[in-house]
Length: 339
Ligand SMILES: NC(=O)c1ccc[n+]([C@@H]2O[C@H](COP(=O)([O-])OP(=O)(O)OC[C@H]3O[C@@H](n4cnc5c(N)ncnc54)[C@H](OP(=O)(O)O)[C@@H]3O)[C@@H](O)[C@H]2O)c1
Ligand SMILES: [Zn+2]
Image (cartoon, rainbow, N blue to C red; front, side, top):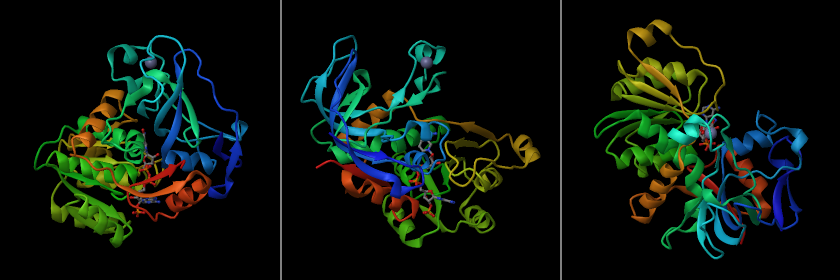
């Protein structure tokens, strides 16, 4: 089978199509013929040598978390309730199954939490019990958009506990997590104010449900623009860096900030007295639960959610997909397909 492997960690030019032996499923495993695999900033960081999870010792490395396709073969064992021919999407969570959070939930807090990699290939060897059946109405490209970006956004929104009419601030509203957050918030009647460097991209996200667009990357410009809209009840912060302080500054008293990323910086400074005097909360959040992903599949099947996929790329053009992500050209998800 062919795979789009990272052969060096210098960026998008480091992706090469390589031949790999076809995988065989072991106990509890399944092999999926991959139809589609979405890419995430997580993969780009690996490709740029900026990931704590994967370093050069693992080259050539096949990344790709968000697999959708058709089961090709299954191994023996408990938890294997898929069959060859089943259309599926993978929940890329890897958990120990025995720690307190695996037993009592939520599973994404597992002490050994890790992520599946290997979807940027024609076949993916996965844990069978991480596969969810896809209704006929949910195509593979759409399904591949869901696991990382939408599941992470969905989980943060559950924790934010917002209701109709509440206001949510989404710095960086145009990418995978950003657009997912805007679309899912809109489904609950939550109003959104979001930012981007690009007016064109913001126009697109407004058509997907964004209520208030702020075209800027400068916190000093964004602050008054958000304050004009109102004091957000919550912030979904996948950018980190200066956006943490900005989000806390504009958020209402008692508001809650969910943090899942660090695109604009892994270190943030903020005003400590404002935090405690304002009774504000900052919470980290990573991925979501397999139950979250199931609900997202159900929302798509019911016609309530249409994930935003900007473009698809054939497997041989995986490097171009990462270049587009790096250049900040796209709105929503970029998906690699194998046809
Ligand atoms: N913890 C988790 O489980 C988890 C899961 C998913 C994602 N994440 C994290 O969440 C973040 C977003 O991931 P993603 O896959 O959605 O990425 P993405 O699609 O590449 O996100 C693009 C968004 O980020 C903005 N952006 C990019 N670089 C920026 C910069 N230097 N300063 C300000 N804004 C910038 C873009 O704004 P423009 O419109 O201006 O280009 C756009 O809105 C990443 O940090 C990722 O690692 C974490
Ligand atoms: Zn565990």
